[in-house]
Image (tube, rainbow, N blue to C red; front, side, top):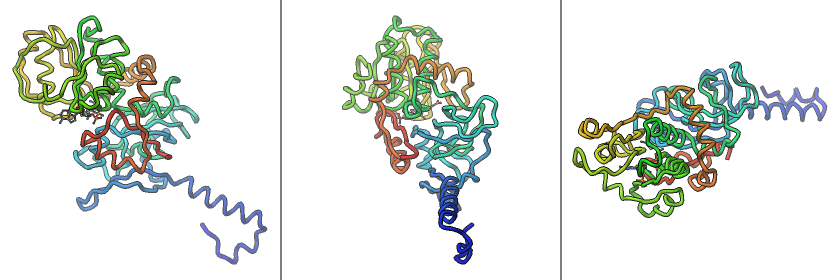
Length: 357
Ligand code: NDP
């Protein structure tokens, strides 16, 4: 609380300076910047706001966030294009990486580097497009020694999902010697990271994209060939010529149906996305005639054991030089505009958000 002018006469100059410093420092330290989403009388708004940390939602670990990211889902939430947010007001951001400031959870102590992906954060629990977050200790993954917080968010949910897809293909016997693999939505976040990981593991990768002008970028990441996504996006035959041993699909709809129809005998596709659509207008023919497998990938509620596995494999299998090529860094104030860009298919690769920038 500020003193009245007459109160100051009791204090000497250094004491006044100390009081002023404390007032300014303590007040500023409790405030943090965040992307706040509100809905009042049906009216939606997204803005960068100054918030007092006493307002943070419950959590046994306080994290000073260093980097967050814009995933497709963040785009949907910030642009209010799908019912992602289920409690208002909401701080956006399904991903964060930072340092533990305070913890009453046995696994975490002050100074630990941590990563948060999903668990409903940014949907029902205040998120990480913010300088501070209170999170549940059981949700957190230790920051691998191989990564800075910036690299962890360059990967983010999109990259960790790409790794879950690769792990699923491996589990279903799709090894590099089985033949070419396909990655759809190739220039996007999941697609770019999937190509880099698969090429690094020795797979021959075909990239499917609507942005043929990004062919050089996709080849630098390791794709051996690039196809126009229109080859896959219209209704096709229930079963077609065998082409790919496996696929990572970030697109859904007719694209996923056509991928299934063209998988080789006993091939597998890891389906994680809906960039073309939520529908799946497919036939059982490739399942019952070719014994193909459709593996569903969910990153949000994925059990901790699989998350730890995925992050360990990312540390081993993702070339940091390729991650650099994939990543652009933006500030918190740029994040709202970029959220609209990602939905418009205008973002290449991944966006890491420097929340203090
Ligand atoms: P991005 O926006 O970065 O990438 C999506 C890509 O899909 C685009 O870059 C574009 O690639 C392609 N695309 C966009 N619109 C269409 C369309 N109409 N038809 C065909 N292709 C299209 O998003 P992310 O990579 O972050 O996420 C990809 C998908 O995966 C999203 O649907 C997202 O919701 C989902 N996802 C799911 C997760 C899970 O847990 N299951 C986790 C993370 C993401 P190009 O220009 O090369 O054609």
